[in-house]
Length: 334
Ligand code: NAD
Ligand code: COI
Image (cartoon, rainbow, N blue to C red; front, side, top):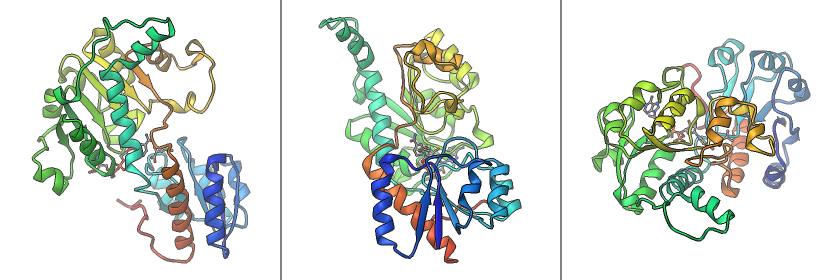
């Protein structure tokens, strides 16, 4: 059996090596390139592919794999919004993901972004760069005075809630499906509008679908409290960047913590040397603001997460090739 892997980084190699040692019956080959129509040819002779990328998986790339007789794909991450399910189904592909590699990684990052905004850390950092050891005007706010609206109470949202409760914050939550534990605690509100109305901080933890693209738009922001903070560690396209910029300009939004951005693939993973060189005008606009914290889709990026992503993805691909039904199988027919 042979598995070909795409987008393998240096930091993944030790975990991959261990997986290979534990699975001597599987031949593994890999490239650091992402899966495209061109690179798909590299998988010739493999029975399945393992991959990770934030750019789109094109139909052309899938067609090349199909011609090579490969129809089993295992991604090393949670979100599969960069696949077109129709393409997968038309071409007869099976897809697995890693639904739970470390929700804590993303949840901790989320709460850290909130804390950095609440305690105005970027402003203190800027002052310190100038040798300024004064307090004013960078007075902060405490978590226990905040109502945090958590949109999406899946694996990550629930850990966010737990951490926030440890800090003494009040939590309200919204999800299309209710989790029993969150329900028992009485945290759910009935609508997004209600969550927007009550929250001092709003944090997004839902997958991206066509139906919720730009869910944070002018109308949603209109329903929020004045001086709201918005955190997004889910998917950039959930927020209409124009509306966010408008809200920041007017002061309606006090600040934002963004691990993901609409059009992030145009800037993330590259070194621009200075903010002025960022080519995407809207991202540059956000990056220039002291009350906006941007991280390069790195919420997931911990040692534990990387190890689990490799193990689960390769295990799943092996199971697919053996004709088993892995628990990580994505329902592409839904
Ligand atoms: P999950 O599937 O466990 O939870 C998602 C929750 O969202 C579910 O409870 C679901 O019922 C709910 N939901 C779906 N559509 C909704 C809607 N329209 N309105 C309200 N709730 C809705 O997923 P998770 O592991 O918690 O991850 C959430 C998202 O975080 C992923 O889909 C992915 O896009 C993103 N993510 C980002 C990073 C990162 O590094 N920044 C890492 C992992 C995941
Ligand atoms: C995910 O797991 O869905 C992420 O967003 C992490 C990223 C490496 C794609």
